[in-house]
Amino acid sequence: MTYQQHIPLRPFNTFGIEAEARHYCEIHSVSDLQAIARQQGDEPMHILGGGSNVLLTGPVQGRVLHIRIPGRNVEAVSGNTALVAAGAGENWHDFVQWCLAQSLGGLENLSLIPGSVGASPIQNIGAYGVELKDVFHSLEAVRLSDGELVTMDAADCAFGYRDSFFKREGKGRYAIVKVYFQLTTSKHRLRLDYGAIRDTLKEMNVAHPDIHDISRAIIQIRQSKLPDPALIGNAGSFFKNPETEADTWQRLSELHPGMPHFPLPDGRVKIPAGWLIEQCGWKGFREGDAGCYDKQALVLVNYGQATGQEILSLARRIAASVQERFGMVIEPEVNVW
Ligand code: FAD
Ligand code: EPU
Image: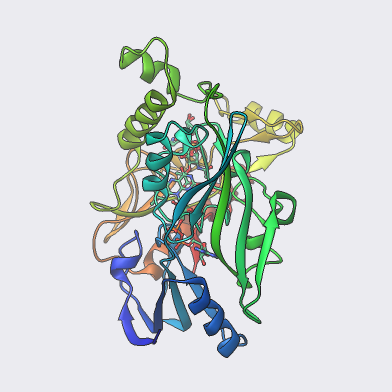
């Protein structure tokens, strides 16, 4: 396990931004990672998975550890529940399809999310009515300060909407090496209520959907509105959807009729940032190669040669205009390096 110097990261980030890693190392095993952490615990380390939620704004100083730890396994079955483990370096969507091929349920609504298994707990990935926390059992991570292997359960991870311990107190302190999931082997709980799932299944002529149909429907919906990073650089939603008190939404909706909203279990309200951004006139905007996607305003795109600084500057202008018009702060979901 040796470091390579001055490695171009363009192939390793879905925004397709050109930036180099001063020191880069691929990690294929837990023991290699532990050895690195023991040697260099006090040096800044950047953990890279599939690069689908990072924006590179310049050369990456410190060390880039590219997690490629493989492995997936059904560890135990009890009743209709299976405990399934996957190495952090596994591709997320391949893992979801591997589970589906064995008729394991729980991950189907999370089909086609780019990236790695190891990054899935970082922002508690979510889509179409399911979040990672709903199927999460535990994880193993290497503590970067001393190379110790630690186990964490859901309470340790403190999952929230696009949020976890790893984006707060644990930021930059751990590399996740394995994630354990609790899936169903039968009597799957089908989640059909979110957005266009039912309509899409109807269009597919599926009257009695199973987990495989749901996965296919989700893939179809996602392909219709999100840009394929292989064709247009992007990192999915650039911002999180803001959450606000119900009375704030009430007041805003009187000023801005038609403002969509989604009630949250705690009485608060989530407002789609895509709508706020579209109302500010950014949808389809392009300056040079940096732009706001014309089918989904929440997605910022690199049409080819945009720099990370150009994307970041566009993001700041968008956030400022949303704040000016609606008085709402929208925070980036993407990790800016
Ligand atoms: P990276 O981009 O490599 O890293 C993201 C962050 O996690 C960084 O801070 C990094 O340091 C950290 N990290 C990565 N791996 C590890 C590890 N093993 N241990 C510790 N820290 C680590 N997200 C959703 O939640 N829902 C969606 O529907 C969704 N749709 C998307 C659609 C598109 C087209 C794209 C491009 C992105 C989308 N995303 C979505 C965002 C992205 O796919 C997820 O955030 C994904 O989990 C990122 O995985 P990654 O391996 O690419 O992480
Ligand atoms: N909308 C607009 N204009 C737009 C885009 C959206 O008005 O250009 C409004 C519409 O009212 C629409 C609503 O926003 O009904 C919601 O849009 P959509 O269903 O596309 O979902 P989203 O809130 O924009 C979130 C996640 C996605 C996830 C989808 C499906 C966040 C930040 N984003 O997007 O996750 O795939 O829901 O569950 O929560 C990601 O995190 O990278 C990501 C893509």
